[in-house]
Length: 535
Image 1 (cartoon, one colour):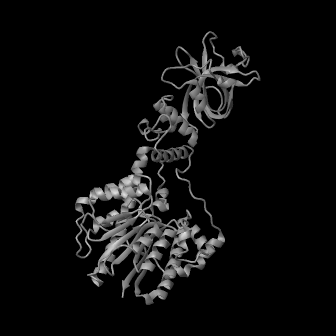
Image 2 (tube, rainbow, N blue to C red):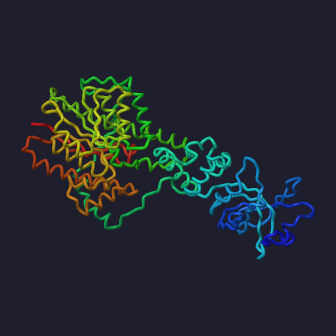
Image 3 (cartoon, rainbow, N blue to C red):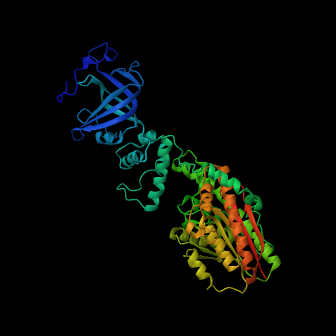
């Protein structure tokens, strides 16, 4: 009996655990999931209630053979004692095990079978192997911190996380004291969170709950005539940099820069910040969420992001550049002597602006982005590409609208305001700026519930509009598609009404169109186009 009196003598073990040769020491292995953990004696003793999934007699020490013992589904008490724990070099310490064996951890325990004073079967563990860490962010992060500090072997850590050891590097804290660079810490936290959710059998990115009822669906049906009035015109053709696509006479020397431009798209997508336009306005890559790759590791995430950049981001940018090219051709045919310029407000890291600057070197491109890291990335990209027709401003929508009036430009300069995934009310703000300045607009709408303070600039802020914005973010594609279509229909109606009142000021609309690109590029694929001729 132990000095603390917690355990009775070994012969009280059931016959199935008693060795046939009394002089041989028997070890028992118990595999299961920790149900509860209790720490006593200032950390010297830890009691774990373990749901047995597998147990066996570990056999005689000399041959290691043993027969199956115990029954699955039982609960057994496993005791960790600082005094009885076998410390070995290169293996976790007693304190490390105590902190990491939290509830819902799946582990294998090997030790001496005993009984508690109340008669409960118990095992005093001398050796432990973690099979699967508790599937929570804090448990995974704690295990990674111990691995980073050398307290837990890398191979054991990788096995407990269910990943190859080669993929640990991107999950480990970059500094042993926990003081990481903010950007690196944020990216690592996302990776660890996704891994924890995968270990728990959940989608790596939470699925938005469905927040609509029969009244909401009835509203969509009630507004069906509006969708019929503004039908979607799907366009599948994209600008081809490889073929040296041109736009009616303007030089387009893009071949030397194509590969670098694609590398920038890939790099921008692997960094934090906005995608396409919208940067500091909070655009979330909802189309990336729908892919929801089950790979939570660094290599898997990098592969997924590169695939996203090549198969989704690049076609979206090229689709927008193609529409810009069509606008330039139309402008050149109607007013060949008038200069043209492009304005991208909230341009993020400059994916769209850089592409336009490369594709149309004789056209001035003005980009605004108040978010400093994104703005610096766009400026760095411009330097690497060697473009001289891109100007980047540290301004938001209102500041640039005021600044635009002071910019020197040739009389009657034709302007196209562009926006790829302009979040929520930012789309309304861009269109409002276009209407106020007599400019054309090409705006891909997105994230309909964001920046509602800007939405009122175009449409009257009503409960109906709020409902449509909420439905546009539904995880059900058939609901969100109808809601986005309807919301943009209301925008187009407001644009038509406002233009009819302002025609006397010298601007005449020659086109109002509702375009879309293939949904395989992005589920937020609806684009409002307004072409303006000056008379």
